[in-house]
Amino acid sequence: MIREGFRNFRLASARWLNDSTLWLTFDSDIEAEPGQFVMAWLPGVGEKPFSIAGMAPFSLMVVDVGPFSHALHQLQPGDKVWIKGPLGHGFQVEGDNLLLVGGGYGSAPLLALAHDARTKSAKVTACLGARTAEGLLLGKDFADLGCQVEFMTEDGSAGRQGLITLAVEEILATGEVDLLAACGPTGMLSALAGLARQYHVPSQLSWEAQMRCGMGLCGSCEVPQSLDPALPPGWLACFDGPVFNKDKD
Image (cartoon, rainbow, N blue to C red; front, side, top):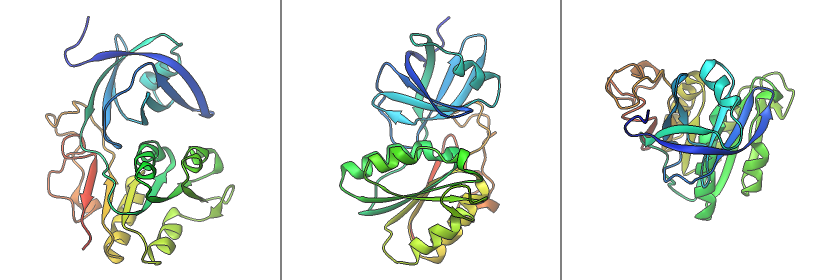
């Protein structure tokens, strides 16, 4: 059975990023904006949304956290995955000096944004944070693009010890940042929205929520305005986002 709107991609290769995370590379490209997402479907298993981690070739970063992601981890080169998308609204490169902030697995869509920004000769600083060193992902990939990379871990096992907002505020205080772009836990994004307002810097934040339909029909992914007063009431991560683009205050 072929579901309407889906097309199949074949797995080309997979590489481990840590004990529970695979970078899956497929056999074709996809035209998309950094930060957009797709719905992935495996017949008999289910359907889940995933951020696009790479466009050329199409790539996904998959953490083994449930039945569907576990099934993706079992794929072998040549196996098919059905994909619908790209969906939603992504990041846009604005300005010459970008600060990208990735909390844990939120670094995946930012890598594609870093690629676009570096192609346009923009300066990019990537702040990557996690609870432990195990959760820091793609640091070498950002560095290979020519980004300055800062690491923060809550337990001090890699980089500086502390919350990532500490490093972000230090960089924003220089007054040199044209755009703050971020993806990660909602608590981190709320704090970053406040820092962007405090330092009058435009922000593009990718909000996560439980998505089911991926098209704004079910309303399950409404992001509460309490997380960021700038969000309009009823804002849906799948249809209006996942990236919320806010001009400076």
